[in-house]
Length: 331
Image 1 (cartoon, rainbow, N blue to C red):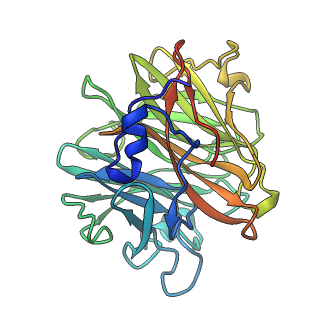
Image 2 (spheres, rainbow, N blue to C red; image 1 turned 90 degrees about the horizontal axis):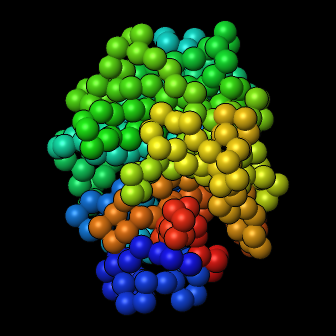
Image 3 (cartoon, rainbow, N blue to C red; image 1 turned 135 degrees about the vertical axis):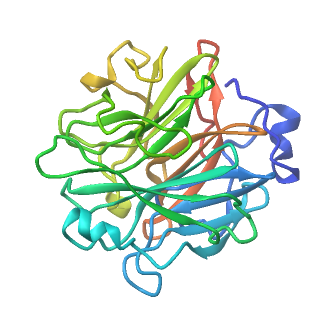
């Protein structure tokens, strides 16, 4: 397998010296309990944001974990006091927690998109928090909620959850999102504000399974092409989860995306990247990211050896000679 060179400090030195993970994907340590991870590198360290916990003292707030090297992880608390107050007015009900946060950086601003919803319905919303100083020592501090970005309801054929922002070299920015219904959509953003560039900005259709499970979007650019990662089937059922990670490729960020066999993702295509293997059940919720050590894929899986607890995996993302992403074997 051809991999980008990886150098995530001493703990990942094996990647830097050999270019390959001798024993497959790395074995993470510490507190790796997570769902819908979004990982970003900050001054050589790593911060992971995740779906909130329903109820309890955190009241659904986004949870945060940190790592000095991408291997050893520590819980770092939460952001804010829970689900934002504007959500109830926009959706007409009280969501129990915040789902699938996604972090990115534009200039001196850190953007944290998130979704609020409830299982089985598409009356949902995507919101935005920003920070001008993401401190790995205090990652839960300094965030300001900027409110609603977009929303969906029962009259729509799409679902406003699982946001992912991509900034292009030409200065444009886009937000991809979607779950079940008619699949994955994309609209253009104002790069500075992080909100839609216009209320009537066009919607691009990226991928669909005509009502079957597809969600957890991320897009990465590699050598002039764009790669759309999604999860097929269903999450959130512990060892009974059927998530599996898929990918397609396009020459433009807005598509059309085709899988390795040439099947359009708009008609159900998607090349399998990883499915359930051994104790690593239902991998998904993935985000592909650039780091100083190379491209990485962050995702969660349900641990078959630990009662189906959802856990983090952060792995080097390799590229085949013909330009397709792949992962080393699981540890």
